[in-house]
Image (cartoon, rainbow, N blue to C red; front, side, top):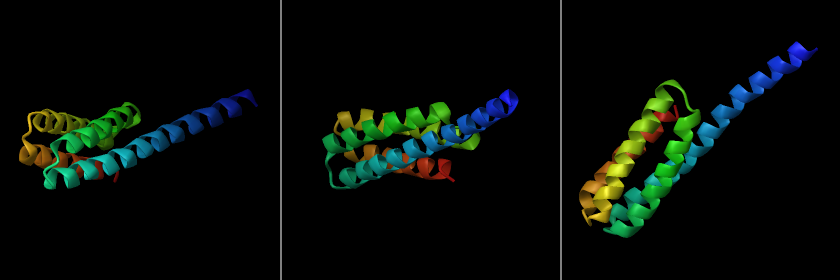
Length: 111
């Protein structure tokens, strides 16, 4: 009986890590999309705000993701940091392109 309980607990842990990664991926995508929208509107400070939130979620999701999903979340984190850096310098166009690249990685990681 104890072995069955341990097996069940392990299975739940495996399933829950996927759920946590999916939650963070969804939230990261929402904020990365918002960063793109505001970047296209020329709002660098708001782009940076959303990119920072997206970065927080990609980093958290990467901690529990595995395989290709983890690789895409890590890549999204890198380009989100680039978008933040560029946005802080007031370079809206390159920051927007970086945010768009992050969106593509996040989408690819959620498949």
